[in-house]
Length: 470
Image (cartoon, rainbow, N blue to C red; front, side):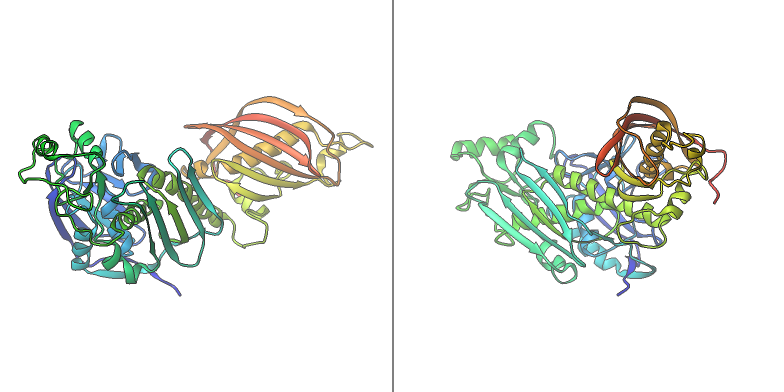
């Protein structure tokens, strides 16, 4: 079923105190056109600079997800983005007149209520889903974090947390239907933190806008009456604080038995919005946090960019083929007799590419290399590897008009055995390092599984005098 993009019907605002600065800010949601995406706009700064809600703009994940562009930042955007994602809104301008959105009650519900008040309307363009078709896994063994995306023609999320604290224990939750479950079962879940974290943040001059009404505070150290009094003074709280029977400060009642796990799912949902498109996938997460969420979102974002760029050039979908010869000719400027790649069979942008060339007796270079004893020139094997490398640079090439990659160096070239007519060359090219317009590759060429040539290459991006023509 074709599902169209959504925005809101009219502008709506929500005001409150920012968590870290303690300043009063106003957030204004405004309708946006098709394919606009989600963007934050700092209306308190000259020129109203915009920051797209994309993972490449994440600049800090220490106590939330912070977006930035140059010196312009917006703190703790995850609850706002969770509300947007949960309501399945695709295009939205989010104006904020300060460096961070209002905290509200520590959940996404204030933003959900504002957006529903504004009204959600469908647009003419279809949603640009990213359909996960292979397993994507992020692991951090030191922090015991695992997040996996599995193929599924829908969106589901399962989250498990285990903080080894009696007040929490092990918890899990599952979100299986955004439309039916998000607003009532996940949007109201509040942020939670441990008392030792609160004290450290306060000592660092942060959480100036925090209160016991905007978070569930879990006590993770021994406290007596004297300590509680010192804590009240230290945190500059007006109300008297006490430890309840459940290990929380004051008379906090959880909105759900597993509210912390639901809030972790909420945070993950917000951070996954930074991929830039809605997902069709099964997400399984163990002990997620903002740092891991963002690293996972980067992996998925890379897959999205790869699919988007391949789709741009590969018209016909073929089994076992990422890019056929027609697609390759749409990317590379090379033509007969110097186009030396027939097919791309695997592509991971900014990481690795696998290409193929069928070597036939019809190759023009066999006429002179060598008459009566045809051998493919080693320099042309290197050139073929470099052409694969040029396709691996597809993401960088696509960002600028008429860009082309030129050799800047070749190192450690070795030729292990001759390549003859009838051989099929398989090229494996890995990106070693990328810095602005310079990209460093390592290439290997195989025939029947045996290494026949290898080299390291450096390529530089430059403007081409004209776009390639077929």
